[in-house]
Length: 77
Image 1 (spheres, helix red, strand yellow):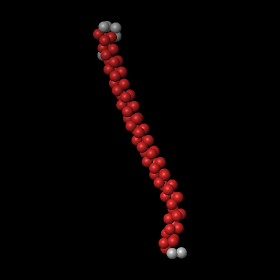
Image 2 (cartoon, helix red, strand yellow):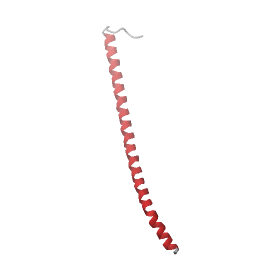
Image 3 (cartoon, helix red, strand yellow):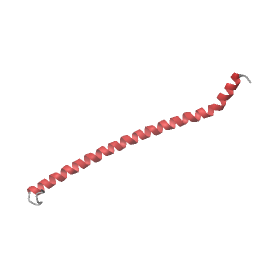
Image 4 (cartoon, one colour):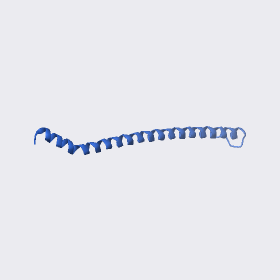
């Protein structure tokens, strides 16, 4: 068997492995893309939660101020 024949035989044996590796690389790339999307979604949810907490805090402070001004709630010291 010549060197070229040996190389061709090795190429033929490695072809299925190369195909599987390419498929795995494609799957990994897809998973990375999904993770990136999930991270973006989590960050968006976190931002919305923080906005909601700030809004609720502002509303509570306003309510307390109004109740204190009307004498319904004792003034906090």
